Amino acid sequence: MENIRNTGSYEKLGNIEYFIPTPLPPKEPPLNLSSEIIEVYGEAMHGLGQLNEMAERLPDLTRFIKAYAIKEALLSSAIEGIHTTLMDVLEVPLATNKADKETQLVLNYTLALKVALDLVHTQGLPIVSRVILSAHKTLMQNGEGDKANPGQYRKQAVRVGNLIPPPASKVLDLMSDLEKFINDDNSLPPLIKAGLAHIQFETIHPFLDGNGRIGRLLIVLMLVDSGLLKAPILYPSYYFKKNHLEYYQRLDRVRTQGDFEGWIYFYLKAIKESCIDAHKRALKIEILEKELRQTILTNKPLSNMQESCLQALSILFQSPIINVTELSKRMSKSYNTTSNIISHFIDLKILENVGIKKRKKLYRFTAYINLLEDE
Image (cartoon, rainbow, N blue to C red; front, side, top):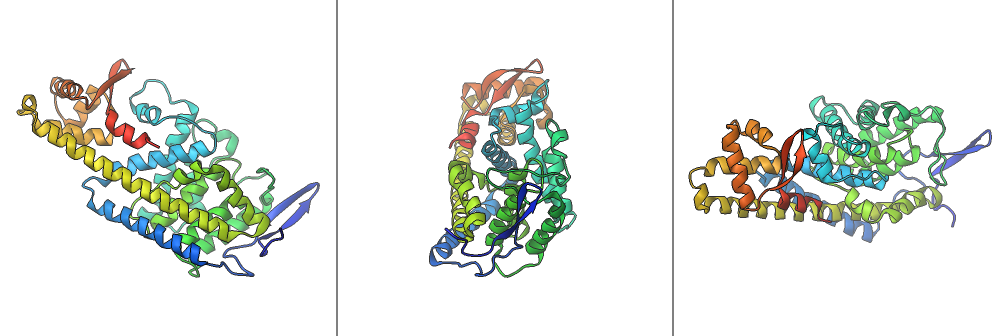
């Protein structure tokens, strides 16, 4: 099938034929927002609205940001064949040994998102190379960073399946064009712009490694920056991972067939489904917290320590793997008092003993972790 539009050109240098994408937005013809695309666009926008409404209602949004950022990090990393568990990630602050390479890469992703958001929100930077390079430097630190030139655009050719992305000499100019599209082009709605920016970023493939993860991070960053998302509580990789073969096929068909429309339709479904999942999960977490608070308030053995128990419960929703020392410090209570609370929580099956790290027993907030892990 021939391209329905010009998406780029091929440049032969030596024996290598590089693909150089045309700057966004799509032209000749311009992007066709069909009735099907408009319908799923409306559903995705509704989903984002629901998430924002939930974010305003939650008494402690920061714990959702942390939990959902970890979930996106796990899912986005898994797409790249980087596999670890939520438990492994949550145990790191309490462990004696360094995290293994894959767990560290997932932690790096959550830090990279934070770094990017801080630069854009706190320092007021637009989404430009400084932000993207800082996120990449953070993502690739500790472990495989030295091999991937963290925080630097690549200086050599790379191959991605059947695609040989632009030569390194073109990367800076192509990223500059992408920055202009992200920050200056108002011809398309911000939600669709984020989807197009992702595909363009992946086609440019500006880094030796970490392109997929930074490209998916860019979606969340753009949605927050545009005001479509009040906080980074969306994990689009939920849908990309479930449909990873189609994900790569849709990305490839943009280059080979000019099918931006097929990609945008798929991407909007990803946003919609991810919103639905994030919202449902948040409602289940709300219900769990209400049930456990009720359990504490109606449990006679806890009648003299209800306030402390409720404080401990709130901390567990922020740090669902914990030991007595850490909980004692967070509560500003004595070791014995905190140990007593944990014993009661074990009796109530709120906590369970999961082993020893740093010569201290670790306790797992099982019901909450199960809600976060549930696929």
